[in-house]
Image (cartoon, rainbow, N blue to C red; front, side, top):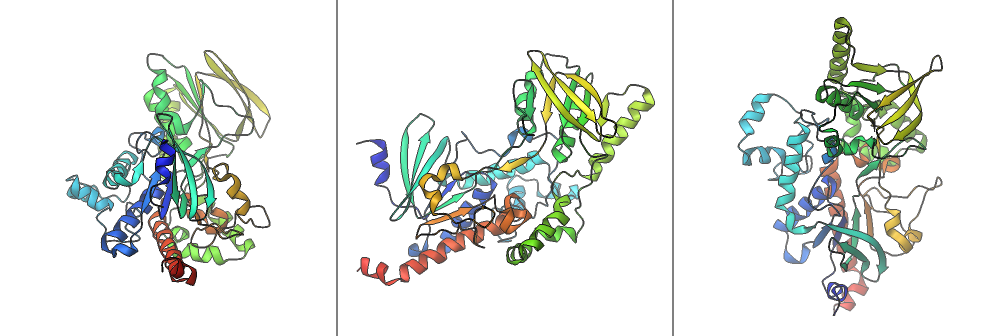
Length: 440
């Protein structure tokens, strides 16, 4: 009997998660905590598949010393269940660092420490995750969906589930026409690729982008390669500080999702426009001031190595075997300069991965709005034209749910809402006459 046939005989999962980053990790914990206290008949079975060989969250951006932009209280669980044993504080207690962290007097752990917290939490629900397992596509079947999975050894297996939750994460976004290569990187891969410069003495490194990631990459490269000139290219006159003031931060509150979801389309567009500077193309003020102070001190010494090419854009990139020629235009005058660089790093943002390539034939059942965007219910369930199992999105719902769509800020609450939605639909199905007759 084939491996696929063996897989088909397994029970149907209540939840099958595609991707096992922070969003689906939070969901796995929400299910685990529900099952711990629920009657056996009310428990949920679930499995999560991730093509990575092990748990990891933007490892290529784990620059030593960089900090989170969200409070540790917006961890995997606290906003949903403050008493959870999966909280960041529980992690600190387990690691014997709780008192030390309190004495540190910060709400924002380093990115490296937060990644360690995520790994700690993932290990505790590791029995629910299958790594090195890539979901290829899914097909509607009477009990929900059949999902085809390719494992690291090349085997193809199938699994069945009543509900599928997409948490595909983010992918690199680069300007139109740009291509990544040996000398042209995206900041998502910075820490994976910077070792390629070991043993060399880079003369010039160029970073393109105006947001936090671009500023962090600029800072890191400037510190790491003390003999290299580092050029930061962005179209604004200066970096825009992130607005993390208390009232503005309310846009990330769970209640704000309710407000946004129910608002007229023109109001949604206004809110997105007003508050993009809480998250997009903005930089922490402390880092802006640090970079400015560093550039100023270099001017004082007459050894300018950090160049901030503001009000500028890249017009041409020519990659060669030993470097990349980056043509930069100063927008006010049109003057152009060619930066012969060892490496060009695009820190130009990310976009949610599109789930539709995985949907295949299922996609035609999904409703779209008048702009062609996927229609999503308040509980993150995709609206479908026909009776199907549940398709849920963790990410890619900014048009319906606002700024927190793919952010950590609301991950704990969102996971609880999806879990409760699955339970609600299952209970409704069980109370239906057809279900009762089929069990009779």
